[in-house]
Image (cartoon, rainbow over all chains, first blue to last red; front, side, top):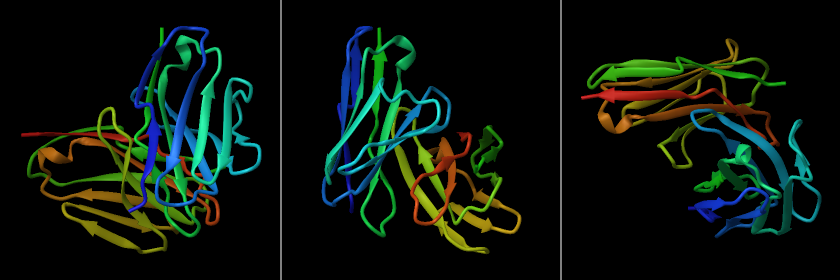
Length: 114
Length: 111
């Protein structure tokens, strides 16, 4: 079945540094990928929709300059958390789909900013 | 804007018992998903319901959809400890995979 791989699974970084998270579709081409954030014991909140070859569409309240999304190919989208702060600590999950197929979720990345 | 609410938020029940989790949504949703999430893990897809009256079953879990009432249910039959997890429903329009997730129901099955 379709697999979506996220890397890294867990990252700890210092406040003020940037962190890049990768989301790859391993056996299908994903024209659209989605990035979600989940705070502890809360639901998933959509951050942005990542479209291959074009700019991402951000949800209201999500800072474009802080959460940089790049979807350079049909199998890779990256989320860069710039100048991370402790309040950015969260579980970040991507999802992807091929045409006429259901969504597949990555395993998630737990970000801790100290 | 679609809003999705789940009830209850927390549920603790004994093994062998039955229970139903409810998912209400505010506007038309062309499809309704149920996911399971174990602590520290990502989402596992359980069911996708596409039409009014749809019912799907897998093991001890059964999901149904009533589009007129804007309600989906996830019924647990004869619960076992392995079903302990957080369950999310999510909905959204066709042609757009932008999903709105419910608040989640944290289920704990007590031996």
